[in-house]
Image 1 (tube, rainbow, N blue to C red):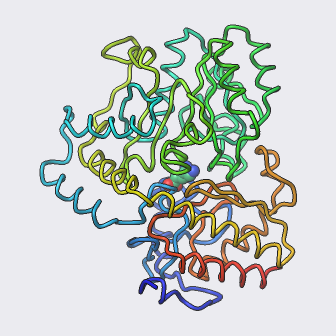
Image 2: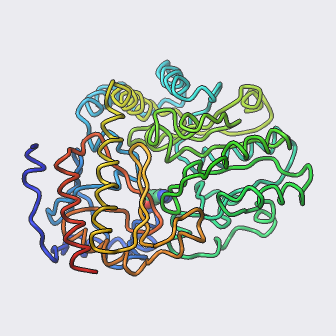
Image 3: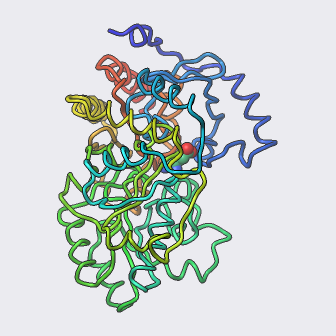
Length: 442
Ligand code: HOZ
């Protein structure tokens, strides 16, 4: 048993977070809601966000010195665990050569070849700095390539905060129950058509009503931003067939699922070849790096080869590339991904058993190192189903788990993540906490 795990705290009902509270008061004078990304503000669960001082392995520590077993992992980014020694050494070494050049480096190509090894659909690619950028650029490219203007996305799917994608979006938009975002013009929003996830008939109806107008379908091939929702039966292959038939592009947003549900993403799991793909989070290993890419005939339309413009000073940043390179190297070592998957499976099957023991309705699922759970009786196939979950009960469970030293996403509509640093005893500790919490709250 690791010393981190051995020392896992015994249950306490309330942790002091005085320092976090003080920092939160001050942060609110600087940042809207005191945060730089909305879900972090804890608004949907109430209370004070945990102000993180440091993180190592499967744990984070707050400014009050409390330690938490982390199932957020920087929203999936920290797949090796936090501050992995080999990654840190490699990144520090790279930093000695400079932080940003705004010019090409050989390491960018090394990383691109690694990405293509796992994701052969990315025949050519571009590095950008965030998943938002990757998705925005992929939509512009799909429109440029097809000469069509409309896109289809799914309710509760989140593809970053580009205007055209903030329509019936997931993540913070779903968490806070916002209809859509103010500031997105109706002209822009009108070009975004939406359908319920897992509903191929609804998508077919959109194509029938908009003949020759639809440039692309973009989706999370396993949803993480409305909680964890799996594609049913032939949904992904039906979308593939439909796009091919209609001359529209199929875009898999694997920012969350890439290298996370499978080393080759959901496209490898379900054996589907999308036309364009977006990646983020794991690919940068904790540094701001994301990717979009796909068929080379499409990617050749990107400037300077073609007429679709996209650029960025920090694109392909050398420190971020180094972090991504080492992260993927460690992740790809024999047995590592299987270990993450096994820990995740142990967690989720344990949660299901515990909920059953306490007669609490729970739907939970997992793939690779990603998981999700809803407090609801019925299976969840789309965002409408997800919204039927008991969000009030979730809040109580969330806070009780936090007080037990387990940090889960502060939203009923976000996925959770397990890393290589999570040991069997960490999972057992988390399950003991879950058992105590459900026992106390039922
Ligand atoms: N959009 C992220 C979760 N799906 C949250 C980002 C953050 O708060 O860091």
